[in-house]
Image (cartoon, rainbow, N blue to C red; front, side, top):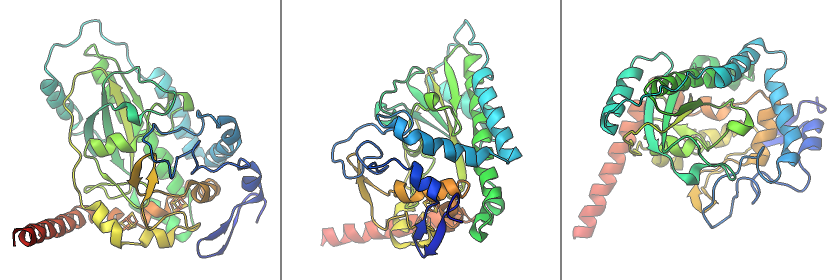
Amino acid sequence: MGLFVGEQLGPHNYKPAWITRWLFPKGLSGNGPSGNGVGIKEKSQPVNFLTGSERKAWLPLGLVFLFRCYLGNFNTFRSFIIYNWREKFGHVKIADQKANKTAAEFKADLKEFTKDHPQIDILGVARMNPDWMFQGMHAPFGDWVVVIAKAMDYDELAHNLKGDFTPALKQVIGGYERTQFAAVDVANWMRKQGYMAKGFGGLAPVKNEWHAVIPPAIEAGIGQLAKNGSLISDKLGSCFRIATVMTTMPLVADQPREQGVDEFCVSCRKCTTDCPPGAIYDEKKLVRGVEKWYVDFDKCIPFMSENKACAICLSTCPWSRPGIAPSLSQKMLKKLARRETATEAAMAE
Ligand code: SF4
Ligand code: SF4
């Protein structure tokens, strides 16, 4: 203990391993202006730590994180190899002739093509917003982003609540590979109709991480940002992975949807309590001009890196238990509606 694996000294008091402390960039914070930008009042594009201005400082920690995820774990290593092979060679040639349809027709066809796809539980479409692009990246793949969500196996993931992180890692890395499989399928369907399209997921090489994925997923109505810094969906809870397709195919955007997540998170502290290093705040933070839920990077990343992607905050969330999310969402939406009615009545008096 201590050299390569940290120690839990008490509730929310995790001492990272010596190697993590040694590799953590001296004088830098992942929450700071060159990282996630907590406290910055002006809106600005997000930073990818491994392509941003401090990339050289973060690289050793990032490499050790990857090394821990893949070394000695055949399943995750296989997912990594398949993923990267598919990203490089899995896209078909773009047809010379563009299919001539309206955006609404393409959208309807897309829904039809994906409705029984084994690796797609939810699909949404958003118009690409430059604010989502990582600083220094410019989208060469058109105006539209399709977001794909696929549930992880909750029972497997939840082994992490008993301190066994290997099944959770398999779910996280395998989940990224499965959603990317679906994203490349969708991209190929578009390419065969003459449109540029490329599927990306959470294991993309750094140079191919074009944009933050949570903002387009919210915009496409997939879910809402939760206190654990991840999405909660009214269908899948917090236990899912997402991948995206950037494309020139004309589409029709879905809309962000109120799902009752924020209202629930305000009075729930499950993830805050259960996060071993105490990285989850009870209150929202100002992050690059937007007030939102935020997870402390400097506390989360050392623990996550040393414990195979961790994901305790996903499995402990009440919304993640299979079958619970739809009813929780309905309950919260009714509560919000009652409050709105009461407010209107009070204003009318
Ligand atoms: S991944 Fe683990 S360490 Fe990070 S916020 Fe979630 S529970 Fe905390
Ligand atoms: S555990 Fe509770 S507070 Fe945390 S994300 Fe889930 S619902 Fe929100």
